[in-house]
Amino acid sequence: MFKDTQFYHEHIRKAIVAFGMIFNNIRIERRNSSDEIAQVMRVPLAYSTKQKFISRIAQIPDAESRGEVAIVLPRMGFEIEQLTYDPSRKVSPIQRNKAVGTGDDVNTVRTSYVATPYNMSLALYVFAKNQEDGLRIIEQILPFFNPDFNITVNELPALGIKRDIKITMDSIDYDDTYEGDLADRQSIIWTLNFTMRLNFYGPVTNVNVIKESIAKLYEKEDFLNVRVKSTSTIGKDDVIDKTLTPADEFEYITTILESFGDEIE
Image: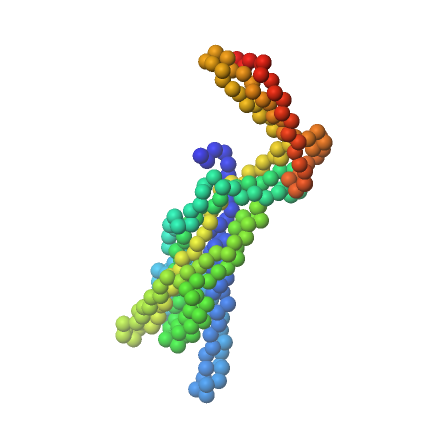
């Protein structure tokens, strides 16, 4: 099945980058007692696990007491949760995607079997130290997911395949970790769960142009003699001799030579 073919189309990496770009430019305003804008800050975003953020937030009092730089809230993080096969998007596995080669491969056709559909589950975490900051972030996200949001990804550059990938918001969870201890710092966590519909392609192979085809049809008169009924040659002399590319327009001439006397052993 795997033979000696090595390939890597960076499907998961591209999906992570595309997902992160959606939330990479969220800003919030801080207002003073006169309701004037006192501060505008961009919310940091990182690919990291939820537990790692919670651990760093729990260390804030110790870091501040030692004069160290503590983690700044609000901030966001996201991570992959799982990949599952999506049978609802399955198509015939023998179908192929094709594209004319370029450069040194101009005389070939690049092909790849149709993609295998998978759904990737992701979780986006919003960490805030107060309700106002958390709500300002959440309300900048929710209007764009109804419940889907589409982004265009260059799935397979070798074949020029670009596709709109659907991202669906599945659920939203809320958690307030503050339990009343004065030594603890309040941390509000919003968890937004998404499903991203991905396609995974196999290796891309080069196929040469078929310039000539010879087909023999047989008939069986009895169990001992098998005779050639006809021989068909499909091709064209000037097409066979010249340099032909998949992008050229040409036609075939079919020649049929009947021969009922030749026996095939």
